[in-house]
Image (tube, rainbow, N blue to C red):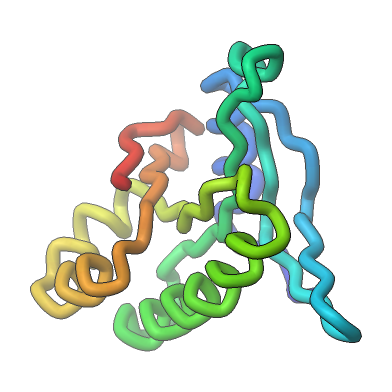
Length: 138
């Protein structure tokens, strides 16, 4: 299992403030003899009784030396997790959570927008300082 991302706790707190209940930290996906660890799984408290919304969230700070390298890692993980979630936990929607700072500064670059669009990566944008969800981009 890898170390928690720099913004892990802020994203977790933002989800909690927004009415989500964390049900796994990390969320373990077992497939055959292998397993992978996605940062969080949550369900929306209000919707629980109505077969509510459930999400799995991979958290990325984009604090490395290269935003492109960070993007390759984030999209790579997303692409590995996506078919596993679809097969083993189809009731969940997979998101990549990033800071509002990363979204405004790195995700406006043409190359980043193109890759996110091509692979239809759903994003969860979080104000890290306020620990609040700013936007869901599906």
